[in-house]
Amino acid sequence: MDLKKLTLMPHGLEVLLPVGSPLTELEYETSRRVIPFGCQSGACGACVIEVLDGFESLGEMDPEEADFLEDLGRADGNYRLACQCRLISAATVRVADDQ
Image 1 (tube, rainbow, N blue to C red):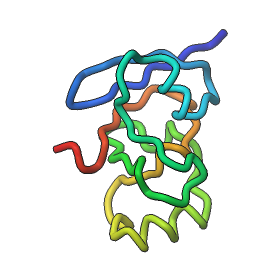
Image 2: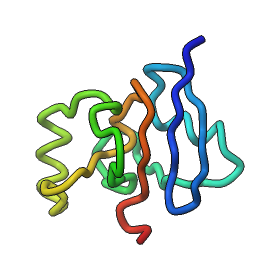
Image 3: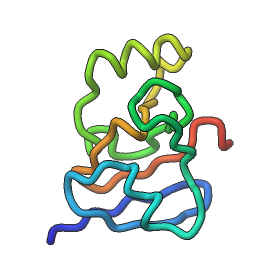
Image 4: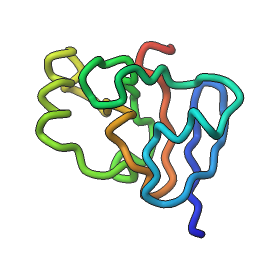
């Protein structure tokens, strides 16, 4: 099984997930809730993350996700909805409101 590393800042928590795993799998891989997943369908905005490294490692953003991020005022920068991402290669992220 090919595993890729997802690093969650500011905690520096590193999690290995199989290639293609949705980031919602983090709920089963960590002892604490590091990303607040709400609806898990890209409709609530609870799981907005800022991609610090490896933006392309989280799969392509579909138009609906891009539109919703724009509605949230997160169109500029490296923001994604974590529930819509699939880990393809190593990436580093943080919850958008977790400065």
